[in-house]
Amino acid sequence: MILLAVINLGEEAYGVPISRELERYRGRDVVVGSVYAALERLEAKGVVRSAIGEPTPERGGKAKRYFSVTHEGLRQVQETRRVLSQLWKALPELKRSAL
Amino acid sequence: MSRITPPRLPAWMLEHLNTGKSNDALTGDLVEEFRHGRSVVWYWRQAIAALVIGWLRNIRNHRNLMLAPGWTLMTMRVAEHQAEVWHVWRLNWPWSSLCSATLFFLPGLIFIWAGMALYLVAQMRTLNLWWIGRSLLLSILLFIGVSFTVAGSVPLFKLIGHSDSRRGSTLSIAPDVPLIVRRAVGGGREVTVIRDKRGVATAQSSTRIYIEPPNSPWAPKPYQLDRNVSAAGTLSPWGAITEAGVWAIVNRLPFFLILIFTLWATARGTRAMKSIAE
Image 1 (cartoon, rainbow over the protein chains, first blue to last red):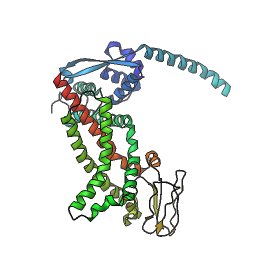
Image 2 (cartoon, one colour):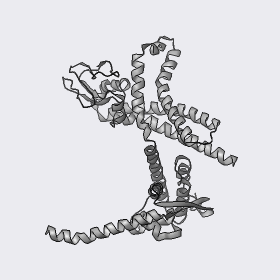
Image 3 (cartoon, helix red, strand yellow):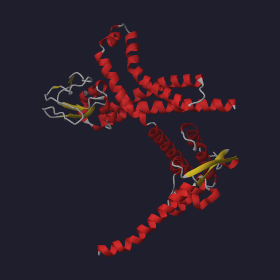
Image 4 (cartoon, each protein chain N blue to C red):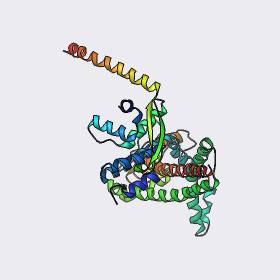
């Protein structure tokens, strides 16, 4: 989910928009700290990379941390989509066979 | 407090108590959201959640602290079999108290300092002796404080949770056999101690328990308990390390907290000095 949000936001993917995007789709509050924890794990796996922006006064002088998806991340997203699509396609057959 | 200024206490906690490379960005995100109309409650909730997540991540990253119970067990065994170490008891007061307190805390501090030294050697390229010395001193104060707090809290919890422990018999096991006790049950005339695959052995009596380890150099002496109390436990350092019972977790707490704090303080100071130099 976080990966898709990062892809969707493009160059504007940092903590606040990512959290809002997740909130919008999930329909409930998101803990920003958990978003960063997940992003750091993904970064350690080489799925995303991050870059520090410029500090701004409206953020109390703190810089934004922008995230983007790596080639490996894109490959994994596509692979996951392919597998999920196949699983969904298989569901009606499962239902029929169960009946 | 104005709408553009987030609550001071959680902001301070985020600034000073949280760890991780995204801490600055996270703090900025929360400020940005707060200024866009989020409530004070929301800010508090986010700050506390971020701290909890950060500390859990820290504990996960320092898994070697699981060695702490094994280390405690070994030092206790050495102390038990080295009677001369305890000759300090024969000194006059206050030296006897001072020496025994030092002997109690020193093994734990050596463990923490060894962990800190390993971290510094592995991670740090520039070392600042002043910050390292400060961290060492802080670790002493914190270790003593946290140990006393944990030791003081345990009887309180047991008092609330188990009426049997009010007699003090269950508690008397804890200082002698930290982490060893896996189960202590009061009530009944017969004492029953459970044998498990990690080498716990038992004998039954209404007043005395003999723990009979299988040819282990770490064999403890028989422990005399109050009436109607049974106990069972692991007898090897490995057993103590892998133990995940309440006692083991309680005993790990001082090590967890102090080593993480010490590493945080040392790394932070060293980074700060490096940035000043640059």
